[in-house]
Every structure is written in C-alpha cells, then in structure tokens.
Amino acid sequence: MTASGTFGYGEEYSEFMDLNRLGAVVVKGLSLLPKEGNPPPRIVETAGGMLNAIGLQNIGIERFIQEKLPFLKQFNTPVIVNFFGDSVEEYTRAAERLSITEGIHGLEMNISCPNKQAGWCIFGTDPRVTFEVVSEVRKSTDLTLIVKLSPNVTDIGVMARAAEDAGADAVSLINTITGMAIDIETRRPRLANVTGGLSGPAVKPVALRMVWEVYRAVKVPIIGMGGIMSGRDSIEFILAGATAVAVGTAHFIDPVASLQVIDEMENFMREKGVTHIKDLIGGLITK
Image 1 (cartoon, rainbow, N blue to C red):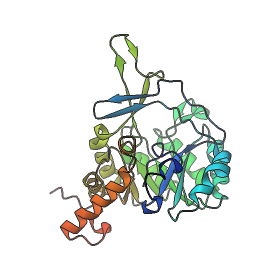
Image 2: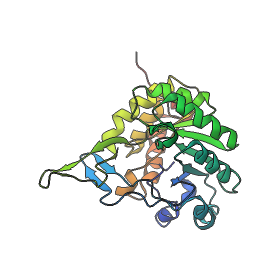
Image 3: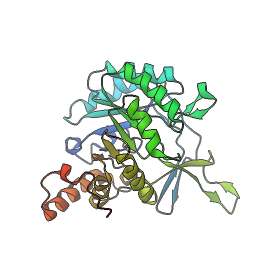
C-alpha cells in the first residue's frame, strides 16, 4: 500500500507506475474543509530520514470527491481515504460523507490531531478519547475502518486495544515520530513550526518494535509502516505481525519505490519457497 501523505491523491504518481499493481492507494489526509497547512519551511532532511510539518494541507473532502476520485475509479486498486478532524463531530461528519461516495473502499482514521473538545489533548495518546472517537465513527460508516496510531505514546498496545474495542477493523502504524532540527548558524529551528514528524529509515526499528507489540495485543489486522525502503524491510514487518505494509518516505527518493518493494518481496518468497505471504505473518522466532 502507499502511506498517506507521501503519494498525493494517486494521480501524481500514475505517470511513473501502473496503479493497478498496488495493494491499495491511500490518499493524502482529508478534512471536511480545505486546509492550508503550516508556513514554510515545512520539510527538512535529516540523517536517515526527513522531518515534515506540512500541517495536513489538503483540498477538502468535497473537492477530492469531485476532482480526484474520478481518476482513481478507473483502476482496480482499492482506494482508502485517510481523514481527520478537530472534534468528534468533524470525524463523524467526514466519515458519513465519505461512506456514501462510490469508489471509496475503506477509511483510514488519523487520530493524531488535536482534540479541542478535550483540552487540546491528542486523540491518539489518550485511550479513553481514542475509544470515544473511534466508537462514534464506527457508528457512522459501514466501510472498512482502519485507525492510524500515533507512536508518541508510552504503550502502543493499550492504544491499539482501545481502537479494537471501539470497533476498528484494522490498525495502521506507525505515524511519524515528533522531532526537530536546528540551524546552528542562525540558532533558529529549521522548520517554521519548530517541531515536525520524523519519517524514513531512521524510524524503522521503532516501527518494527511497535508492530510486534501490537500484534501481541490485538486480533485485528495490522498495516505496518515506517522506514520501509526495500522488500526485505517489508518482510521484517510481516514477520513482526503485519498483515500488509505501506511505503511512504521512499516515494520522495524514488517514485516507483512501491513497485520495487513488491518485486523484491516476491523474489524473496520464491527464493525461500514461500507460497503465500500469510505464511510469514507473525513468523518471528524469539526463542
């Protein structure tokens, strides 16, 4: 799959690859109304990755439905819409609107956004708030509901269980890890927002550990992501317990990274005599 926020709305990458080869296209996060995002600079390269503080800039759900979705509907690949809100009401309204739209096969719920109605706490770091918002969204949609978890927590398993108990069909992890970078010449932060989300190979060990922990905590499928650059990286996530994987930051280095990952996974399976990817899920040997 493609990780939300790294693949635009799908059309941007279609000149480089056949979208039909992907397991799913996960589009850039959408909100009820268009959002401008944060002021620049918004992206900074780091050792082994990148920091971004885009601020969830997007064209809004209605424009996506009218302008972007028709292009995606010509492919056989499932379309999963990542969405977010600033309140429980915004989440449910967004889910309701997307659920009555033909051509959308699933929803990925980003719960790493500020919750204004709960004292600016974060939906994705308080299991009680997670349970509340996911429960309400579950009532608002019959589509497959994936909850994207924040890694900026003490116990990722607790958060995953809260999402599962609230009715999530699957969980995806990890989202970016909060970080920052400083220009020592000017003594100023390199991002206008000061902090941003760290992604890329640098976060892979953390992502793997969290997928492994969540696999032992819940029964719903897991979509693993975080620093996947190759097929071998993907196999690690599958062995840790992921049912599927998503490629993200690698797209900024090579726009066909997803297809290369697929090819390398298939080659690995042929070499090892593995007939089905399911035979590898959770196959990590720890004793």
